[in-house]
Length: 465
Image 1 (cartoon, rainbow, N blue to C red):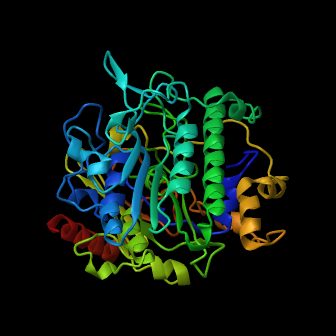
Image 2 (cartoon, rainbow, N blue to C red; image 1 turned 45 degrees about the vertical axis):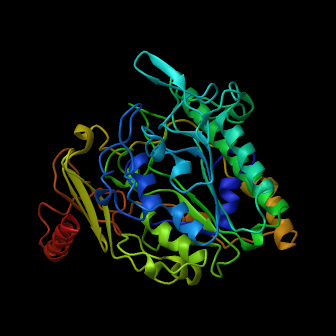
Image 3 (cartoon, rainbow, N blue to C red; image 1 turned 90 degrees about the vertical axis):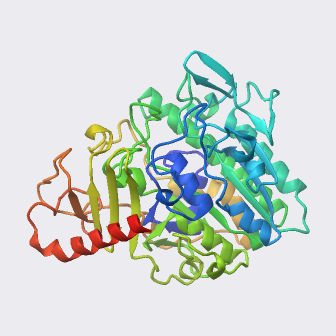
């Protein structure tokens, strides 16, 4: 993260594969369902919105989840942090869905310090160890306690078994009574931002940065890094204002969380592993969150060809050898309740319907001051991740590929005056030339008739499937 005094977020991805063409669902519950099942949410009934507090539904029990598959391969499996896939019956909770242990909360958000959730005038504790309430962590910041539990599990694991940890941090999601909160020592590192909530948001990300460094250090201390696959993925884009807002911005991409625009769905992600031969690069291979299940199953020694009916593609060999992605199309979502849908076919993206009445259709410019990058190299060298990797590689210094940061930066290109009109679908974009969705090709350009026909055919196939 720009400005962090311990920029693990900058150093660690630069040593791995930055996934710069990676997609998730517009909001968190569908993304988590897609991750766990390898299926688009339209195939699990999870395509419309999130599970709100006390709602009596969840990810259907007939689906086999990622921890189930990994347990078939002998893995010890643990979940920490946010669940958000249902809890109205005990069998919908993590330890009944393939995880050996769970330490975290069931809902989409909670208070960062007292770990309560609110619905109307009702307030109650939502913090659990397996299926028992945790009452002794009040006053401790969520990021801190989740990190502590991750380190404990790593240290106390059964070393005779392979180990899978699903660490799903709360940060930087908004809280409840006080939406944004972070330890003061993290907030004080960012006096130059100049906007209160953006400064707190930076502090939340800085605490998260420290957590990642601590977990990586714990893995190295247990000699686990040499046979390890680490994956980071966001579950949706940021939302600058409105319900569940965290002052997260997606500039220069269009839109915010809950929409079908690139700002909501093109997510931050990276992979690090010594098992990958072609690392230290920015990947433009098309990838979706549903791809992680077959990909990690392959990395763990399984045969994804035996996983029938998945929407996900096995990307492991493609990522390892930097081969072209097997994926040529990608379903953003089909929501029959909101009457919205979007699909990408090769370079082209078709969007039907209007999300949230069009209030998040614009491109939101990130406010506040930014930190100079002149000393970024020094900050990266001082990061805990840098110290861990210097020890891991037994080297005194790192030389990253030139211009790696520039290669990971999205450029909107040059298209003249934008013809985008909010609330006026259908939209058709050439995402390779126009990743910021500035120029709608649908109204006038006859050159896109063939791609549009292919996209419409694909939508029909998805609906039929």
